[in-house]
Length: 254
Image 1 (cartoon, helix red, strand yellow):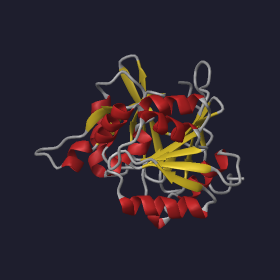
Image 2 (cartoon, rainbow, N blue to C red; image 1 turned 120 degrees about the horizontal axis):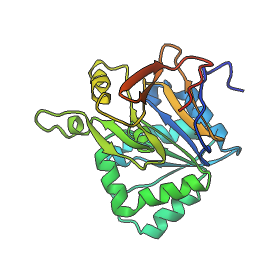
Image 3 (cartoon, helix red, strand yellow; image 1 turned 30 degrees about the vertical axis):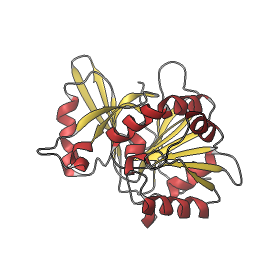
């Protein structure tokens, strides 16, 4: 169905495939329709005519404008959109768990990754999202909502917080996907990631905006809504670090 829309890149992983489904988007303006074809793909994974989509906007401090945009975009794609407010309302953990596990799709918004992970830990959202993964609920998100599914994300949280002399930093994610992740990789200031990766022993991906990393059915692949955008894989082989631009029909044994 989507072969004419997406350039698809596939990675074959060593060992058993994971059991859930994750779509991690490298960036893009959802309000401008830049990720629309990826959004359509996310909805299709639910297999339902009117899936329940839970938007978690914690990283943006539950920004109302962002919430209205997601409601509009995914509502027009046939979803019943619900919101999990964590920064402006007091909510019981049991209610949070029920809300998460009753969803067909979870979409995590962008913003401050470090802040988001701290709030999630406070309310055990991290635990419930891992449970959702095991129940095969579709997990997705953009920017901070992409980084969260990985072992760690290369985050701009210090820039968002406006501290003096900010730097990109690793923020621990949920660890469902055992790689490091960098988003908005087309941005020039993100290129320091290449140098930082020389010190890391864990494999990593770097996603440009409008490109998504997908894990489903035991396979890992990439889709893109913009043919000019790309995805990259950093492979540690002994003392050497190899950087690959993932090309169509290229298979990597990782």
